Amino acid sequence: VADYVIGSYGTGAVMAVPAHDERDFDFAAAHGLPVKRVVAEPDGAAEAEALEEAFTEHGVAVNSGPLVDGLATAEAKAKVV
Image (tube, rainbow, N blue to C red; front, top):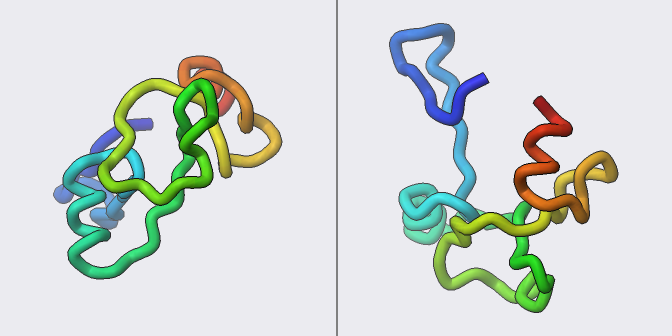
């Protein structure tokens, strides 16, 4: 498992997380692609609001499935790895 893509390895698959990576967010905005939040601020106040920039902080998993929704970022990562 890696948090990046190696173009010379395998099929060169591309991973994008536009709600949580600045470059991916800019690409999605430039091309009118949907941005789905999967990490929200811990207080949940902004969960339903459209993002004006990528949210890159630790928070709480949302829109990620019943296994991890509601868990803190570190807990969610540990549960899926």
